[in-house]
Image 1: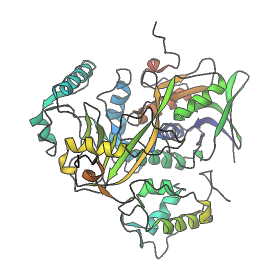
Image 2 (image 1 turned 60 degrees about the horizontal axis):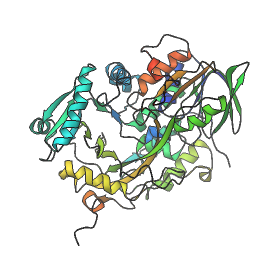
Image 3 (image 1 turned 90 degrees about the vertical axis):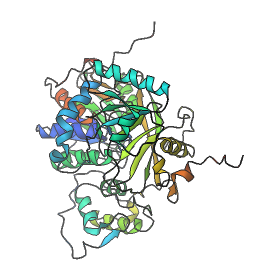
Length: 375
Length: 109
């Protein structure tokens, strides 16, 4: 087994897998190291599947817009596997005047950044999605948003990258990155040593511990979010859904089941067992949120719930950055729970960064040393 | 214990078998052939197989087909079923309506 490659990627999630794919397409040799037994075991298989532009930070918006325009529409074809991408729009729903105020603020901000979003009233929202509760009095509507299946998208990148010769190695916990002659070069795992010209760190929250071995820190914390899925329902609607109050978010999948994510409000203080286990209060809470907006789903059965950690960056925007102090080292972490939708763009950019090419979009806003104290 | 961690390990070509059309996961209607093909597509763990094909993700949550799938995947990889990590079981134990799961039990007050 060859332990040397042009690029070593730490983390076999969708960021690592998509980067590996775009690098392999350019003819690079790549090794991807994954700590767990499964590919895409972190946030990549534990999210709502949103491919959204609305509601994003202005620094992150160009990444989302580029992906929606150039990468997502042809992704299934490119990876020769259906990633279940739907571009049917995003409805962010409101039931009270306070909700509408929040939505108007978000919409105004997004419009000023050049995104096609507008406020609609309850009637118009019901024209788009007839299953809504009569209590919905308005919504923000972004027709170019959508959703995809995060598990399939991650595995599609993995499968294609593997076909192109990328070596994926699971059960490899990275212990440290080792510098040689001042340059990041070796990745030491619990079992072996790997060597590459460039090392990309895309290991979610675990990135913090690994980056610390070369003296770099990214201010982030982790949060456990939960998702639930219903039994298959007849095809109803394919918009991505969210609410002003952030009660829940989700969509109906190709399979017919509804996938909804949400929170209980206890995320910060829930017992942490060290494994992403669901809390008994959260799924019930999410159900109550859903039924307020979609009373017609009250008889839909929940078949499964699961949870996953997201890596929350101090300013909720990812770090996608070269590290000058450690030449040959690239950081890609802190995606803060909205990394899935931008993952094709980020993979493309990381591949360009690793090869020293000019990136398709400016990456200055994502620097690892951008964080300032409050005074 | 023989664990396959290197996903470029050669497990041979996919060879069609006469019983590939048998349905293994009844809830999601997934056949033996589809499961075997998924292994050759790189899905070496039970968790990946279920994310890729939805095996065991239907109403019974794999209570019927879990063992069968484990046997098929192990055979395809050339390892013992004991070497495969079991896939996680999740709450709720049985499918449960939203209005029941979401009920806080306050009606009695």
